[in-house]
Amino acid sequence: MIARRHPVKKLPAIALSPENVNVLLSAKEFRAQLIESIRNATKRIYIVTLYLENDEAGREILTEIYEAKQRNPGLDINICVDWHRAQRGLIGKGETKGNAAMYAEFAEKYEHSIPVYGIPVRGREVFGVLHLKGFIIDDSVIYSGASLNNVYLHYGDRYRFDRYHVLENTHLADSMVNFIRQEMIAHPAVYDLAKEDKPKTKDIKIDIRQFRASLSQSYYEFTPQEINESQVAVTPLVGVGRRRNFLNQSIIQMIAQTKEEIFICTPYFNFPKSVSKEIKKAIRRGVKVDIVVGDKTANDFYISPEQEFKTIGGLPYLYEINLRRFAKINEANIASRKLSVHLWKHDDNSFHLKGVWVDKRYMLLTGNNINPRAWKLDLENGLFIRDENQHLLEQFEKEKANILQHTQLICTYKQVEKLEHYPAPVQRLVRKITRVKADRVLKQIL
Image 1 (cartoon, one colour):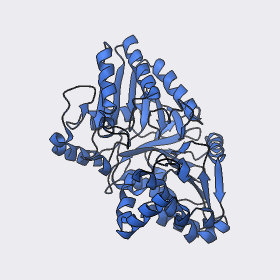
Image 2: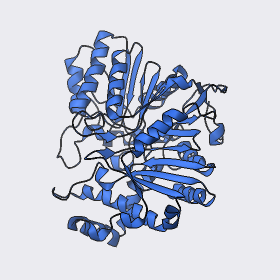
Image 3: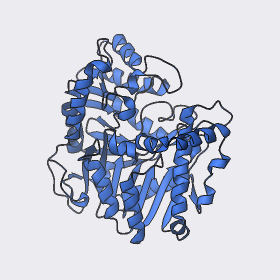
């Protein structure tokens, strides 16, 4: 069934029992849930993530998956990561073979190997990556925007805060697995990164273009079900590129159809024009809007002033400039509390939350950052939940309180630091970018 050509609140859906939805509140809970589910798997393990890092937490997860395979060779296990991200080192850390070297190492070490497929959404990483989310283990879908490494899994002292949800449902799990198998793994552009004989990106450019074209036409298949008053509805959505992107359209519809309140999270403050437009309209018609965004120091690219500055460290400041401009334009709405902007900061940790909650009845769980890059370049997905009878209200209110506990309410745009107060290297970079008008281009790919 194609979840297209339907108003978002009337999408074809899968019936879900409220007791089969569990909201986790921390990275440590997420890590524990993931490990427990892997250890108890009897049928399948499908991991889809931007990256599975070659660090302590990444190796722990991959070891757990491999040990599960050795105990039960019949387990259907597939891992999908971004093709480009897996074959390079961390930004600013020099050249390496990337995480693919770890995948090959594990495949060599164990009797029963596991494929780690590189998904090439575009010919170059800067123009699009695998940002699809979801860990399907047996009939559970563990959904989070988090990738798999030390900071996302709170392995050491620091964590990167995200959202974490567990949905138990055979039909949903089957739909997501079938998409991975049929629309991703089966395509000629996709190769196992754990093997030595993988091609160079330049050798599969035509396949990659065909793959992206195929993805732009793809969707989650499932048989729609009737939803009774004791159930909630869930619809898996997918989208890539600016045309016919039903995930983007659904986000816009959610905001456009809001009657009372919107709660929206984004880690990088850079809304697409269409989203900014609908938020503005919503405020005008009396909708209460709450936006939660990370402080610049909670951005994963932030470099403290006492450290050596690198160009990538300018990104958090560019996002903050966007935020200050937005807050200044909306000063009156902020003062009247029609619009509340919450700035998240907790010690030395970082912020990676995304998602939309509308009228306390409609929720989007997604890895979509709700920015131009997600809108046009990356392969994204989400789970749209319709909860007309508010069975999940208590859980989501608890999650909301958990999110807001480390936030500061912006009461005026003057609370947001301005360019003149930035470190000198940042000021020079921002002025240079603005002078050559590169900021317009950057906003489309960041």
